[in-house]
Length: 440
Image 1 (cartoon, rainbow, N blue to C red):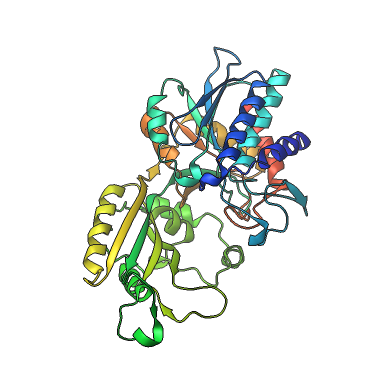
Image 2: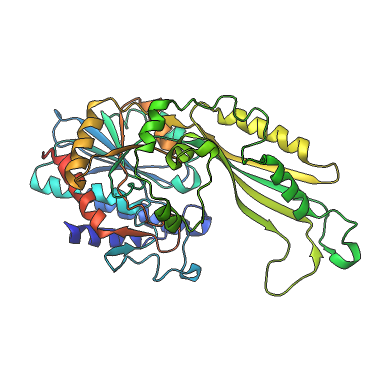
């Protein structure tokens, strides 16, 4: 099975299906065509859904009309990558070394959805598949899936199912994980403009407004001295965490030294001594993810920047209304910007966080198969990341969802040398085979 998995994943990986740039549109098209051919070759009925950004691949296999139907979600789009960023090998060529597979998308999400694809293909051949299957594989997850909610509403009948399986994330400390929810949020871009041109820093320095300085001052005011968010009303509807969940999170294995090694940081900074999983999974955050201003090339160009731009990411918990937070943020920025600075604030794709009901037969079954494959009792964890599709599925399809991430914790998702540990691949394949064949 491992060999079949690698061979098919190698074909999948080679497509530069980057959704963040129109430059890769032809690669997106090739990826969709490949998925369509691959599913059809195994007897699936395939529908390519267009009109909602990049095409969605919907592949259906009816094993037995009496069986329950599972919808398996995945995404074929990936983050940008190039060897010039420091990759040890071509990011779009599956490479194996030291017990790991390396490539862009090898865990996020091509490698993880392929775990289920290859097992279901194999079980079909053996006549051992115990569910009817629908694969829903989209191409805009890395851009926030801005039109996927409308797609799910419009195609609700096509997506009819009994439950949903999603594997798109990481296990924790070699323990399998069932995720209980995600944070919501949105991205924003703030641009400050102080002039229609860059100015000589000697002739004008100390007398003229400096865009980079003004932006930094505004950003600084977003945060209080203790690191909390200073936007008025930001915390008004934040969920109460509760003692039971706090206790559950404290029992999740956490090694500070391993965290420092994994993150490359020197400290853990949380509110009120929160544990890592409570802080990242159940508390909101505002993160400046990018800054751009002035000359940053080789040598020096002594000029005052005429503009400065910041990318600011909001992570919100379930009860926070992202649209309301957007309005609060707009008011906050308007109040902070001095009258000699022009500014532009753009907001992208706000979405709600979610907490799932884990008290259902599908979760219980998944937990048993995860324990069988990994040899450890699965942890329940609230994930700090965002996966808007989970909220859309919950609100529109209203069926149970199994969120079972299958990647190693040190996979380097979105980073250089993204990798999939082959020991974890083996356990993931075992889980998938066991679950879809009901072999217990």
